[in-house]
Image (cartoon, rainbow, N blue to C red; front, top):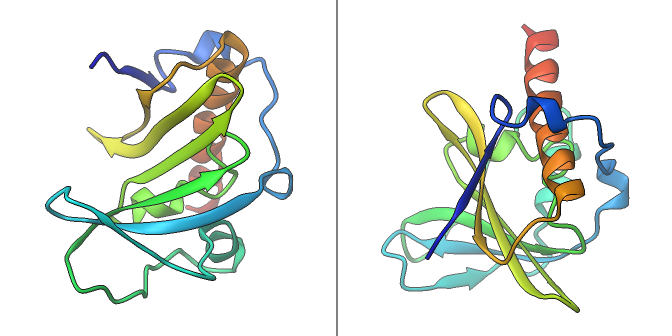
Length: 148
């Protein structure tokens, strides 16, 4: 499977597009993914968007019957939200999936070599979406720099 990687450095020139505000993103449900890649456990009532809106850093306080290797959330937008960077900072990759007229799409937000990276696992991003992702990644660095 071919994947695309989007990092702030690779797409800085595309960052002119505006990104969605966290309040514009709808989340339909999240699941904890198993460490062995064999499945996931739904987390009814749990929302990464809500957890990252709170003051302070995101911490994953859900217990599971398996080692959690990541968090998958289904949303109306494939673009990572304003505070999603807190999830990989806490040690968990954040998988975002959408379903639409153009099929399902999945991206994962991680930290690789001390850089935020969005990797496309399924489907494709439009040029406008790539620009929004690059802009969002840049906003993560700006937010972290302003906090330090």
